[in-house]
Amino acid sequence: MLVFFYDKTFEGLLTAVFDAYSRKTFPDRLLGIGEIAPMFMTEEYTVTTAEDKSARVWKSLENKMSKLARNMLTYTWLSEAEGSDELLFRYIKKTFDSKVSIETNFADIDVLEVHQLAKKVSHEKHYIIQFVRFQKAADDIFFAPISPQYNALPLAVEHFKDRFSDQKWVIYDIKRKYGYYYDLDTMVEMTLDNDEHLLSGKLDEKLMADDEKLFQELWKGYFKSMTIKERINLKLQRQHMPRRFWKYLTEKQ
Image (cartoon, rainbow, N blue to C red; front, top):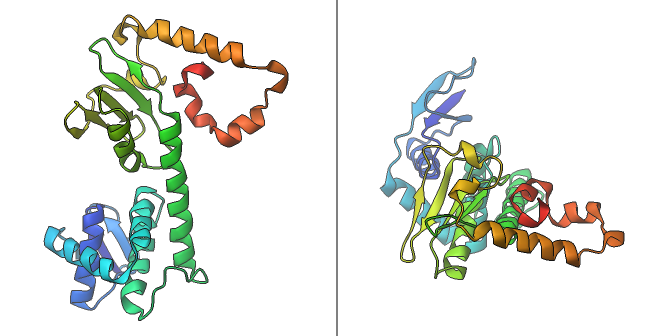
């Protein structure tokens, strides 16, 4: 059994593809550097991530695949599903080895699984866009904590940059401990030294702007006044608004 060890980055995965074709040997397993090797490993190779190699592989994929299919590769990577890197490696190898496009060959289990994973991540991207709720902090920065099922924040964040370009904001993924900060000019990835206080889904009242609590109460009052109790359908709510987002919604508190 041949095992490739790499740094668990997308660029590292593309470099692994490059090295496999250069060596003319293809891995049976892909593992992160430092992970325990399987008992039946007979050979190992450590991939050194190289930007030029990953760029060449991506450029080759641009010539072999549609933009939609390349997006599906990115979405599948962001799914963080167990074995998704090995799935992508197989998919990319099949793409290069085939004389015709494999994008719609759903009889192939790898093609089907990539399509299904990408679709789930795409849904999560739209959930983030729909259900992010900003809270105004004392320093006039609008803050929104989230914890999506898939790592879809990088796919959704451009929407907020375009939609809320006139205010400073932070959207922070509590589950993965990173987020994005927009300062009216540029958007940068950031982390917080201490994010334990965000687990409740709300800013501490001491960190809120003076008028934020009032706005939240007004919104909850409006939501309550518009609700017809006899028509409440929790099953339908959960179908269109996954419960994992509820703790971030002011109106659901």
